Image 1 (cartoon, rainbow, N blue to C red):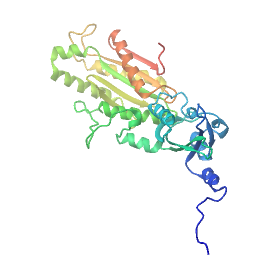
Image 2: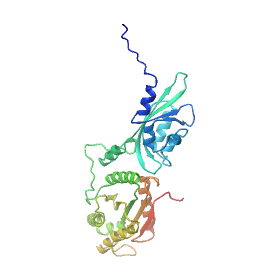
Image 3: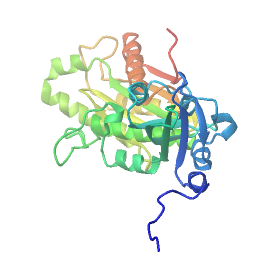
Length: 325
């Protein structure tokens, strides 16, 4: 009696297994210079939000929409050029605007005729990614250096607000969660006017005391569980507000500035005023439609620098989006 087992899959079983798989699978034509999609399973349709008819004949770029300035995209293209396996983490966008983190692995394969194909395995790891950000972990995919050491400080020692590193983590997390839930995100930036003259007049110790008073004024205005307030750099304060009423944003920022002016902190050598004042910039954007959370912060700082050239107690409130050069 022959007990040798046949190691070949029964006819049709492989196709059935791929169709029934719970993780997304995609097959890409490796001979096509554009690397167009040839086949997807139902799980990939569910993951991406696109139907098979929209995916087949298209490229993986359909998943990124206009969000193409990701280092992982270049890494993926280079791996496919070199015909080697690659795993990347991509910010992806569903047709309804929802954003998710797509862990994608592609592997090259050649059939019996020598034709080249790519097999892709995709998973939505959004929940895992959010938890990593909340825990302060960073990934190489986002091009942010890792912090060494068992503990990373999250609080600014001078003011008690969050520090810049912690704020950037919170901004990244808020950016993603607001994109996923399609909620607006408002970034508030505050900076004292002519603070350098204050320090020159009264010294570093008085300057630190002044910063603590400013921090209390900013922090007191952002008390909701979802709010975040932080000190950035030397004399810059930032806060995040999610889902804030548009018509209340300007008055909220103005009250912070007025609260600081009411402190009547003397700044006798500053032009235009004899008390320390605060300027504010507020940018509100719809994550997923605007470029990037890093650019949001950079644009707020550029706007603040320009505004303070125009005088004291400046208040700029505007929508965030691509700047027109």
